[in-house]
Length: 406
Image (cartoon, rainbow, N blue to C red):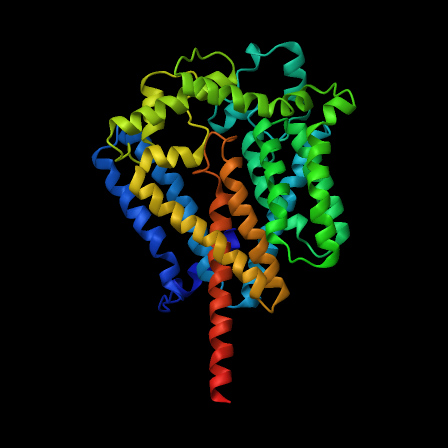
């Protein structure tokens, strides 16, 4: 990442003129940033507003660095190689943590975290069984806590699944599933199933793939009813398989409006309903970027992070700006999917298909982490996705120019 930012800034340092190709692709991001900056005028807490914009600035630097560095297919490949290198290192550390061989000092569960200015988790409140699981094999990688790490895994899973090498697919998916079971997140379990369900819409229908699509319902059914077939003694596995019960319970609680915060499901349902109520109280304008977190802190909620990034954007940005963001976001997904079907360059088609599905699955996966605004990988994915579109448009333009010259 440092290399990408350095290479992107090199032309400025040597006095060269900054030229942004296909700048229109960035206009929606510019508009959203301007709005979030002006939201300070009605934000409940300027300290939280400043903290959110610090994370946003770091993420946008990474996003623009990727976008600006990529000028052709060669540089796109180089960016992909750099990102893969960092992510492989992150996952390797996660595997070591899941095997009880390592615990990074910057992990939420590390006893040395206070040396880095963070208090971490209060392990004293956990039961002996829960404490042994947390200290033993909950992987966090470079992402501080398991939910953030799992969100990054979800973003990378499509790139593994669509890889041309069967060996990479087999080993990669095995490691990802292993890490998901080590994390034990219900949200990631649901997001992974949704990813499997969405795969047929991102695959060209050859004979073999058509058969594979027919087998998908049986695969999903097998995963869903696995607890009925074998005894899952793992605490994390049992927690994952309670995901759908928790979703139904949470929706019922929100519909009734009678919520007494207790367990994780009721607490989240309570803060989601609180956020929606605050959106109505603002007449749909929103609370400003990070505004709902400000109120959770102000009213001393048990959970002081919203834990659903896209719903938080609705509450923070308001109805109209959120709709503008979602049009941009969903259009980005659809354009990438179209490129994956039309691109003659198989590598660009692979990048586009994987990025499209990763951006789509990020929506349900964003329920798990306390926030996505500080997860650098998400910004890098958006920057990489926009760079794919830029390279595809430039190559298409060059091909048309050559055709006209002939």
